[in-house]
Structure formats: C-alpha cells, structure tokens
Length: 310
Image: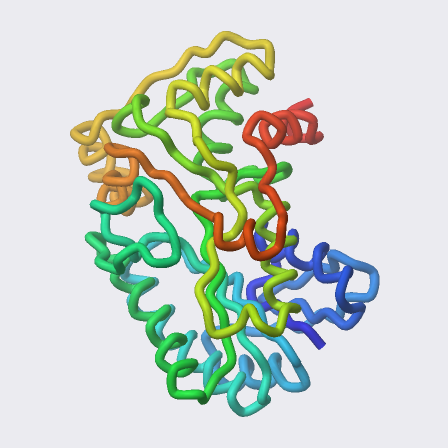
C-alpha cells in the first residue's frame, strides 16, 4: 500500500495518477478524500490528530506527504512540527518509508540563482524557518538510521487545472484569460523558475519507488533557463492571443495591501524571491534518471488547452 497524506491538492492528485505505474494499492487521505483512480482506497482523517495519522498509515509501505496547511506563519508554526512528529513516529511504527514533498523556502536568499541540493540552508523568513525545522527532523532520523525517507523539493509550481494554488495561475493566466491585466511582484526583470506539476507528480512517484533514492534530498525536474517576469507574461499572452498588459506591484504597495489582506501580509516576507534571479537546478535528478522536464512553452500551452481557459 502506498499512501498519500494530503491527497486533495494539485501535487497529491498528480502523484496519485503517477503511482498507478507502480501499484494499484493507493490510499488517499485527507478530510474529504476523492478518488483519482478507480481503485483508490479513501480514508477520511484529521491529519492534526496523531491517532488518526497512525491509523491512516498502518499497512503502508510508502507514505507521501503532500499536505498544504493554510498559508499563515502562525498556522505553520503550530501545525507543521506537530504533524511531522506524528508522521515520523507513525512511519517508524509501521516500518514504512517516507517521501516528503518540500519547497525551497529554507534556502539562503543569497544563493537562489542556481539552487541545488547543496544550497546552504539559511532561511530569511519565518515560514522558511519552519520548513527548515521540519526538514531537519526528517534528516536527523535518517542519519540516526531510525527512518528511511527522502525529501523531494519543488520550485513554485504551475500546471493544468490549477486554479487557485499557483501564484502564476492566479496572477497571470487567470487575469489574462478574463481580459484583466496580469500582475507580477516586485520586479519583472528577474528570472523565475516554475516546476510543472505533472512532472513533479511523476518524479515524486519515481523517487518513492526507487530504492537507492532514499536518505537523500532531490530537486524535482524543472526546466532550465527560466523566463523573467516580463517574459513569462509576454509568452503566456502570446499563446493566448491576447495583449500582454500587466502591472508590477512594488514592495511598498504589497506591504500596504498586507494591512487589509491577510494573504498579502503573509507574502511580504517572501518577496525576496522576486527581487533577484530565482533559478532551480534539477540536474541531479535528470542525470540519475535521464528524464528531462517539460519546456516552459509546452507547459504554458498545456495549461491554456485545459478546459478552465476555454
């Protein structure tokens, strides 16, 4: 049995589809699980309850964590460490492997141009500090030999049928598709990597089912030579056959908006990702498995072809 905790999000759905290449015994766990594949086993659980987490994991050979808690430092600070502690303990009790789908918030902001698995961990944000803490919890257990696990990291992501969980979808695709101006944060002059969700799902499934991939950190396949903010908007607009109208929201405006909008308040500490080149390197994965990520223009076209934009 291969189990996905937090199976309802974009990554969880993509992963569930990809896992069918390796098994028909797939368990989807969240508060309101919905089948992705006909043979999926559904388990309803409150993932903040250690007893329910333990029960959801029982009988699993591999557990994938694709949980997405609300985008709030206060929520993350209280929820992530407690959740990860219960997952690690449950995996140890069940003698199963753990695959943690992670982001890059923990990396040193001075080393974002060419991020790889050896990039220094030195978060400058409170949410990044939480991510560093929970990643270290996993790494400590693998080092001690008490847990078999791997960490799969993604850049910001984009992909078909993602309506409200991708910043690129919300601020560019959605706006241009509805005749509005696209929005970009801080500056449109810097390169910014995005990981294509179907690539991330397939790669996470492959890593989970590769014995020698464990007890390591992996960057999921992400196209090289990313576009700048301006190039992203222009390319998307061209593929949609619309004018590339957009505006750039400076830091001062976002801070003011944060006084009235909780999501913008939470975004302020992450703006460093947009005032410098943000380039994600997945060459370790590509070299090991011989798999190339989806080119950006192809990914953009697939998103536009999705029913949401028709």
